[in-house]
Amino acid sequence: MYKTLTFALLLLGFSTWAQDHNLKKDYSSVENKVIEWRRDIHQNPELSNREFKTAEKIAKHLKSLGIEVQTGVAHTGVVGLLKGNQPGKVVALRADIDALPVTERNDLPYKSTVKSTFLGEEVGVMHACGHDTHTAILMGVAEVLSKNKDKIKGTVKFIFQPAEEGAPPGEEGGALLMVKEGVLSNPDVDAIFGLHINSQTPVGTIKYKPGGSMAAAQRFVINVKGKQTHGSQPWGGVDPILISAKIIDGLQTIISRETELTNEAAVITVGKITSGVRFNIIPESAELIGTIRTLDYDMQKHINRRMEEMVPAIAKAYGGEATIDIKSSTSITFNDLALTPKMVPTLQRVAGTENVVVHKAITGAEDFSYFQEKVPGLYFFLGGMTPGNTESFPHHTPDFKIDDSGLLLGVKAMTELTLDYLNM
Image (cartoon, rainbow, N blue to C red):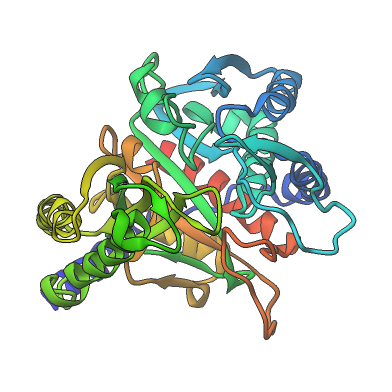
């Protein structure tokens, strides 16, 4: 109650920062371009650390606006620098640019038919998480701001980030590599803003949460060793597929019986199992790959410890062996408690107070969190579902779809956040 009241008072106190920058004509002129860019990028998706054509398109556009451009950041990332006519702070704006190994099932004129190779398999490639919209929106923001340098008191850094979905095995990438390579310095960034389109939130709505907004993500790999035998004689070997099933079942008890879910949500998911070559052979080994999602670091430590104890113990109980390797993919996406209330009035001015909603923390993850570990940041959700739609599809699915009419609000929100922050 106290925290809620304090946050509300902060919002009231900062509401005077939200100003009208009179950019209506600029927004109107860029909307169709943003939709066109988005559809082109959607039709030509590229996987993580392989976003060569996407990066080329972005760099060409920024250069055409007179923005200083750096390419090849974290492999395929693009960074643009726009200096205003007046000195001041530095604000960074981030969009992710990679697609997913998903085969699109939508019947759209700009549907992706691209094929590529992922983990040794041929896959379809699709912007099934909306990164195409993020890229197009930030390209639109760059165009609007480049025409209004007189309104910019400071510097804007545009960060087009590759590999948000995770670099291929054996490679570095994403926000963490960008941070390592110094993207938040030269000049030093004072604050960073980012957004994520949401297919199940109506167009015109913005959602945000102060503090922990999205989960920390970890990737785990379990290798199970059994003993190969004929499928008709299971007693002659040790079945790694059976052991894998028991391990999966056991891991879920960590969540359902050991994790205090009334404090924060947590998830363990096995997303891939590889084992065997033929129906009548019990194989020698199996590999399980999955993800852990947590919103509390103490809970994360407990879950990790129990998984490391449980996996080899279950395998041993059934006559086999197993190892587990856990690696972090993202930290908790944490919206700065001082910055957030300062900027909410801007979102309310742009979208309408009734359309700016506080959401509960979610178990999705974002490597935007690595930027927020270094500088204050605000990350919010933008509605992409057609209002009144009775059917919408989750992210990372073949039927994922976004209503393009929601993109302009994203352009407005990111632009106005930038100008308001720099004029504080």
